[in-house]
Length: 246
Image (cartoon, rainbow, N blue to C red):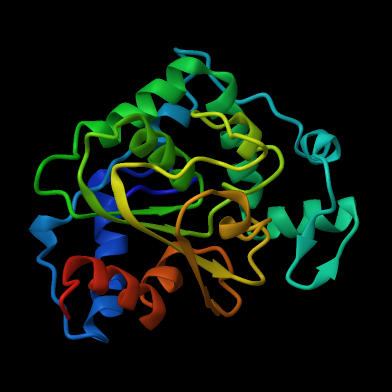
């Protein structure tokens, strides 16, 4: 599992403690049980943690970042203006997603280190990679860089991968405006809450290859990982990857 933005004050054990029960609940709808010992967290939040001795802090103006983005931003089915969008992002803590995404793309050391955290965990027994928010960017780039990996499934939740300021910066670069499907991945399912402002574009429209998109409703927690994970729809996707014969 690969976490998203805003986790700089946590760690891999605490992320797993928060995520595993939700993952187990989502799988339980389908009679599937995964031992907690079989679940690993690729933690990279410390790379964004402010350190007065190291002197690092992301320097990103959220409103300027959004102003530079091309296209019309949408929240669900309603067009909204820039001021309204900034407030919505702050209310949902998605300002951290944009700030850390900018830092990820601008700082090559952070980008390489974040990807290395997942690369260190993926092995011959890895079946499914589940990623949320900014973690979908980290996981996508790591998976695309390793076509030799034999991963059954890739599940993305609350993903900004199709956003106008994200897609063009990905490694590998898109071809004719469409992202490349990671060749080492057998299945990719994107879980999207229609009211999640991080999900700026349907991923099947943004990427080549068989990306399947499923819709969920997270209530007022539109971007939070736990309601994404414990939803029967997400559980169905992961269960099907773990037990394709089922």
